Length: 111
Image (cartoon, rainbow, N blue to C red):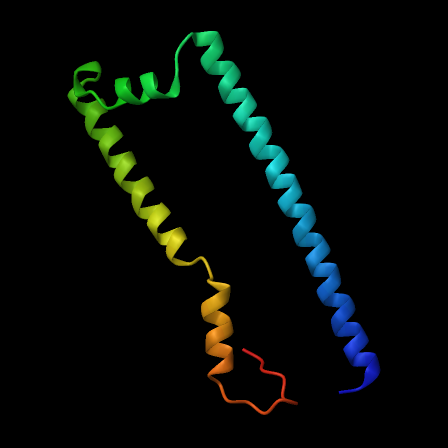
């Protein structure tokens, strides 16, 4: 591999890493802001997340149609979460799979 190509690849990797770090920082800031907003909302309503959860889990507070809709939404959210969690890549298993490819040391594996 030529020196220019190696330099370009390294530069691209550094750019991606910096972009990912920036996105992570933005997500952390947004998460903190949302947590503060939620905390303020609960304080203003003089309630807690546990009280809201307890209220939402009792069928007597809803009409039968609304209760059924809530249960359907919960089921859909659970399925979506499980699906999303299943697609999270595990870097350790990827590294192990890469080692098992038995490629020559000077080869660059491309997926």
